[in-house]
Amino acid sequence: MQVNDFLRYTINGVRAQRLRSFLTALGIGVGIGAVVLLTSLGEGLHHFILAEFSQFGTNLIAINPGKVTTHGISGALVSNVRPLTIEDTESLKKLPQILDTVSVVQGNAAIEAGSHQRRTTIYGVDASASRVWKFAVATGRFLPDDPPRAARSFAILGSKVRQELFGSTQALGMRVRIGGELFRVIGTMESKGQLLGFDLDDAVYIPASKALALFNRESLMEIDLLHSTNSSSSVVAEQVRKVLAGRHGSEDFTITTQEKMLDVLGGVLGTLTIAVGALGGISLLVGGVGILTIMSIAVNERTGEIGLLRALGVGRNQILALFLGEAVVLAAIGGLAGLGLGVGGSWFVSLLVPALPSHTSWGYVVSAELLAAFVGLVAGVLPARRAARMHPVEALRTE
Amino acid sequence: MIHLQHIERIFLVGDEEVHALSDVSMTASDGEYIAIMGPSGSGKSSLLNIIGLLDRPDNGSYELDGIKVSELDEQQQAEIRRHKIGFVFQFFHLVPRLTAFDNIALPLMLSGIKQEERQVRVTAALAAFGLSNRAGHRPDQLSGGQRQRVAIARATIMQPSVILADEPTGNLDRSSGIEVAEILEELNRQGITLIMVTHDPDLGRRARRQILMVDGRIEHDK
Image 1 (cartoon, helix red, strand yellow):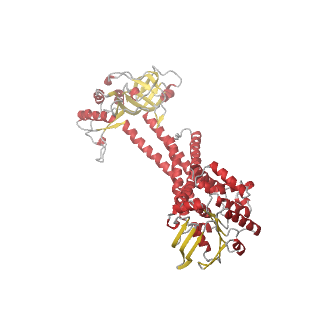
Image 2 (cartoon, rainbow over the protein chains, first blue to last red):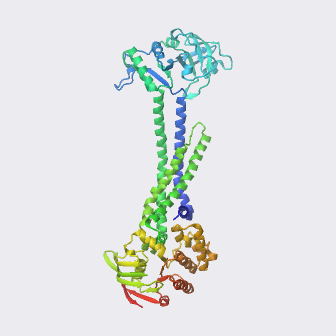
Image 3 (cartoon, rainbow over the protein chains, first blue to last red):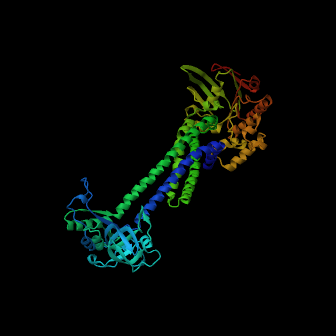
């Protein structure tokens, strides 16, 4: 039997019962549609979140005080932890692979400008922060490269703070009062939007040493390092660990590389995508049961035809192939419809909720269609085997 | 040439063994016209199924055109059925969703013969059986006589050496029945061996050789 005749015969069998075939294929279609739609949303979320995090660059290393160990108590709570200092930052800066360092102190304080007052997040940082975090300045300039312990009282305003305090009037060169101390505004930031609910624009940047004094702290909250892209972050992290452990006498700090964090995050999001895909897979399973049922009915109804085919010299294996082929065709048609449903659905969702990212990857689309055909194949096995095992005499007797 | 020797066929009905065929031996030469007759349950259909390789005997040997077909496996028997044997059934057994043309073309399609050749052969067959203007009709749009003619066209499209007909007129009115019988006899005159199962004595009398079966045995062969 030629391939095109085989296809014609099986498609003919599917077409002979239009409504029934349509409903059965619909079952698979809904399943595939659900898989495609859900994985599209999952993939979209994946891309979205990774993009949010990697906007700061992937060759970042963060050092936080205190070692998270398995002792049950965070090292930060134990009194013999030495604070991370600006001097630690300076010593790390000397490492050959380290391009830039940022000392970070963060806190909340009131900022006043004229009659306006606002509580906002204050970041104590270095001149390098705008380079390391890829923050662009909208007007003026970022903090100057002053000696870290003797920085001048300059402040850079986030776009929202600028808007709230100064409105449409000029902010550059104005004096503001932060926690009672005077700062001069020398720059404003471009809008960065939100990251997981934190408004990056509702912030003010001042030198780290000033922030330490403002919040009456000795210790930095974090040191961020930007390393060159031609050395792997784990190697750099190891060197950083050696230098700091030498200075502190023990490893009382935690090193987090952005690369590792993105890996973990990517892994979690990938699992999420597969999980929602599997959820859609359940409806696919139901569709498969539908095919099993309909093919069983078809085999019953067409017993006479099976007997005839046997009499015309068709072997058992060919009967098996014919009915399997019909189940696969049924499922594949449903699968194609499902692809339409899924892709259209995710397009529709992105129209309705533009904030919800969706990303249909062709890999998922192709594997969803293959999955549909596979479901048809598996669902067709039982009925097709029954058809193949029929005794031709018995089969011919039924009419 | 059909050669059956000591054929036995036993069915289990409940826990009782029923001898559908017991020690049946017969020979049919090429081009013979045989009617197998007998009451219901006498084993005439069982005999036809064995000859048609639709069923295997429990005992005995069967030779068709010099091939010991009772020793072949399922796939090889299917090949023999395809090329040497044509079946005509009481209930026609046309595929309801296919047109007359496609029903006749079915054996050609199943054996992988190309579309162009199928077109030629089926068109010729349609003309030979007076069905040219019915080519595009489905079975439910055809009369009983036309359906059986389609079935006979299908049975002969592979140019078999034997036609096995099981009550070919049993589901037809009298005039259509006679018409179908004449078509089968015409094929027989062209050299095809015709073996027909019937319990219609009028039809049986038309055959040159009649085999009467009773209780799974050949009672009478003349």
